[in-house]
Image 1 (cartoon, rainbow, N blue to C red):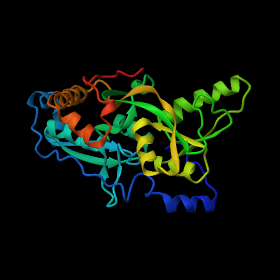
Image 2: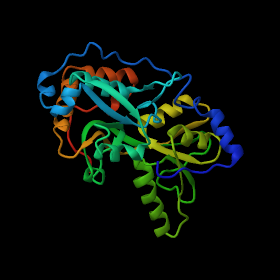
Image 3: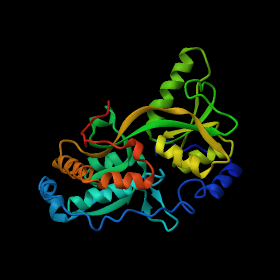
Length: 294
């Protein structure tokens, strides 16, 4: 992560007490989708680079702190519907998924450096990231804010407010800085952007009163609200819908292989089955695209 917000000692202790009960560990275990019966798509597998095909493995980087997409269960396993879908893509390619947990902002450099084959960590596909990696798009997610149930914050008028966010995400690098700049241009107070290493910490900041709201991808915010119904609620509606994408090396044959495998899962219904089981089917797509973000 690029920045870690420093909490006072007592508040940090409270965060440690709450972390895990808010969104992403004990009490939120979900049954994973069984991908053992997924058949290999020979046409998709034929597109794989020779070195990956010969290895029989797909090395996948993720920051497992973004429930319900990618997170750790009470036993420390990396789980989530995003994990289930990537496991299914791997199975369709005849590869064994090898998950490697990493800081969010280290995943793309690791792909560029050849340490990882692919990044599956709720990446928003945008033009800036496309300069360094290619994306196979697999979902459409919006931005959704949450705040204490009795203190709704307008995402379009958050000047002077404290807003928590997971460090390195679209909300941290693009959304909030742009909104804060608009505030200052209008002669108003800037937004106090509070980056945290994981989404659980950003959510906890609102629960504990350290922040007045948080901004995250819509499925993530809805999951956090569901876990803290008596404390937080949505602020406004979802906006700025954009595609999630798997991050891959630029101009790699692996991109075409992953696209073909994903499309195969879409066509036979496996894709929708995974999303529906997780309750996130509203963001489903019909076509696996490449670099559809702008």
